[in-house]
Length: 400
Ligand code: NAP
Image (tube, rainbow, N blue to C red; front, top):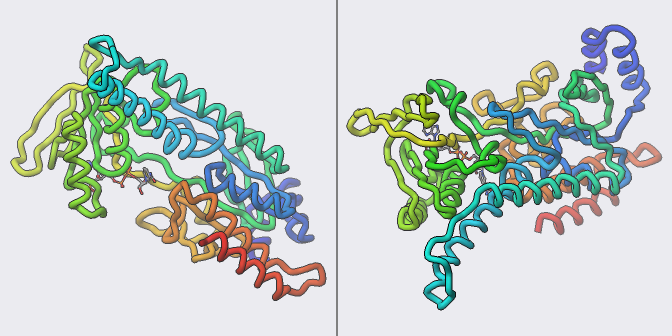
């Protein structure tokens, strides 16, 4: 009721009245609206639809600073695990070609890698997955809406199209699974104007050339690994240690191997500025944190891999009272992925502390929807204990 009152103040005119009437009568457009069509959001929406729920999923990609955009499927499919693994495969094949000579294969003396061919193949594969996801949603009768979703109240979602057209949806339950995007160090002059992130690298039409990768965690090392493997001059700029939070003995083995494989490491260095020279190359100025001395070198590309951030601001959660971690900006959830607002759930990279990696998104979402179903009253208006026990048993199987 509180939400209805808030909604009444916020909403004026016929549209607001419609939402009010729907909420008041308890009739919603959907049983479940999912904001975010990545691994978690897609798995959850399909699972819910299979359990007989009326479901809509909203997905919208805000283009990067460089204008890169992609389609349905989220980070993993478009700018994460999938293209990354394919580009690693390209690098591994290059290594195998070199090894093959020693095993008697007659090869030309020099073998060149063509980025454009690889990128086209990777991008076509990703597009086929985008299409596959759309077909799966259609088959499972999940309504897909290419709209940017935000919350108006705990039962109402506002979808905005690229052209600015607004669509209002009401739902009994709402799931937020919008993930995160790479961060730019905006305090460094030239970082945004001249740099790229992992949201761009997989969609480049031309090879990035001599590349400086800034950052030394997962994303940085993964990208530096395949760039080196396909023969590009690649340097990793490390501020402190590599793979912070991991066993440092193991981290050392990884960076030693990468160095032996050809990746350069610039230890204890922090970037200061990036300038574009008249030749088109990028001049990077950095300082050595031990000596304080400044250095410069030129690169064709600068890839920032300095962490990822959730996109909670545009979701309108502050007005709703959904609790966030003020530092990380992530939505605080319980073990059942519930937020501080009833009927609103969140999972994946947007939430904490129970954050699942992409690959487990498919497991995280059935868990959520089973909990939702278990708490749903039966047709006589009472909770069925038997149903709850069945759900718990199923949960244990999924979790195992
Ligand atoms: P991250 O783990 O947050 O690490 C950020 C890196 O950037 C650190 O090395 C950090 O150095 C450095 N850094 C931050 N600000 C900097 C600055 N201004 N100048 C220089 N260096 C700076 O970020 P990430 O690698 O982008 O990964 C993001 C998330 O994605 C992680 O949670 C990761 O687990 C996840 N991920 C998962 C997978 C997978 O499942 N396969 C793959 C990729 C990513 P310090 O250590 O000195 O702070």
